[in-house]
Every structure is written in structure tokens, then in C-alpha cells.
Image 1 (cartoon, rainbow, N blue to C red):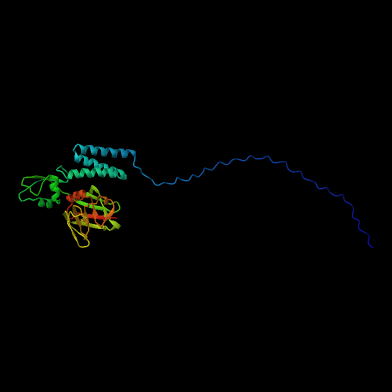
Image 2 (spheres, rainbow, N blue to C red):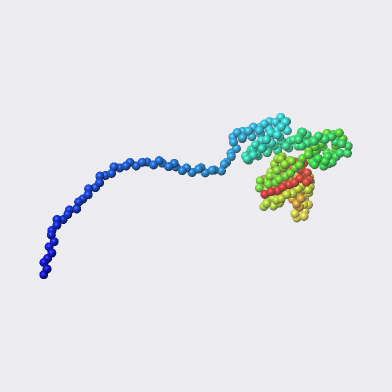
Length: 291
């Protein structure tokens, strides 16, 4: 057999361990500059413009001055100041109401008396004149000429001096507020509280006054004729007919219904105020009724 191959013993090599590198010198971290915080722009809130205290003070002062002028008989001056106060009060319902109340009272005093007024004309009665003729000439009512000039009855004489009103009236009724706004030449004159039809029976739209009747008779829906003065007559002391059959503006014997929807469809005022309105407005006066 072949001789065995002898492998010489070789010393085993001990693996050399490489020592770990010395620890690296730590490098200090450089702080990065902080990024500016992103601030969201403020959310714009709806701007609410309150009535500034100074404006309230100015308005109150204007009303006080108007009242002072009224008490001393300077009505035209009082009217101008109250009108200015009303304009300043726009946006403040309470102040508007106060200014309207004062201005309405001033207007009533001016127009129902012989006091001078921008809308009045001095007139000398001519031969052949009558109250009706003068009223038609100036677009006013006989009742207003009588009232504002202290004329009793229909008798006037040539040479008599009168102050005669001339102006354009308009009426706007609001069924929600139950009020009636009377304007003169497009500007506020006076506001009245009214009653309107229950269940919203009062018609809405544009109408005009077509008849004026003092001490009206009421034709009941069942066909009966109810004369003026009868407790069943619902029309009060005066009737202003609208150009829609069966509807009008009238007085009432039930003042507790004013400010409510309680009528059969007409617009009603207390008797003293419907008489005042009757004295002022003429046939043809436009009337708007709105919800």
C-alpha cells in the first residue's frame, strides 16, 4: 500500500485582535436657528357699529333743544331740530321712536293751527270764493282750511286772510307692526298705531283713497244697514274708502283692538286719530299696504 502522506504540524496562528479606535471627540451640535412661528392671520369678525355714546348724547341734546323750542312757541325751529334728531337716530330703534313721537306732535300743532309753515300759502279771499273752491285749488281739504284758520262753518268773505296748506300726502300701512306712516312730500310726518284684519285679511298692494265720509253708515255683510251712532256700527266716526270694494281706513269704538289684527279686514284707528287723518288727506292720496 502506498505510504501515508504525513502532514507536518504547523503551529496554529492566533488571530490578531485589532484594538478599537480611540473614541472620537464629540462634535458639539450647532443649534439651528428657530424658524419663526407661522401666525395665522386673525379671522375677520363682522364689524358691528354700535351707536357711539357721543352720538347718543348729540341726539338726546337735539331732542331736548327741539322740545325747548316747541315749549317757547318756536315751532318751525323745533321742527328743524326734531327732523335733525330723527336723522341722527337712524339705526337706534328706541331713539327713532322718541324722535318720531316729538316730530309728529310738532307737525300736528303746526298744521292744525294758523301758525306759519313752509307748506302753507297766505291767501286773500276773493269775490266768488268758497272753501271748497280754495281747497280744490290748493289740493287740500275744507276741514283743514277750517281747522287751521279757526273758521266756523262755511262762511268766508272777500278780503278774509287765510293760510292754506298745500302738499302731497302718502300713506303706508305695515300689517306686522300694525302702524300707519303718513308722509308729506316724501318725508316723515306722523306715525299712527292701527288695527288690521284678523287672520291677515287686510289686502296687500297699492291703493288710493276714493271717498271720504264723516259719520259713516255701515252696510253689514248680512245686508243690514247700520246707521252712524248704532253700537253695532264698526266704522267709528270717519271712513276713508279705498279703491277695493268693501275696504277702507276708519275709526273704531273698540280702542283695545288697536295694535292687533282684529278687524274684518279694514285698517282702523282710534276715533280721535282717524278724525285727524280725515282732516289732512284728500281723495286720490296713495295708500300702500304691506306685510
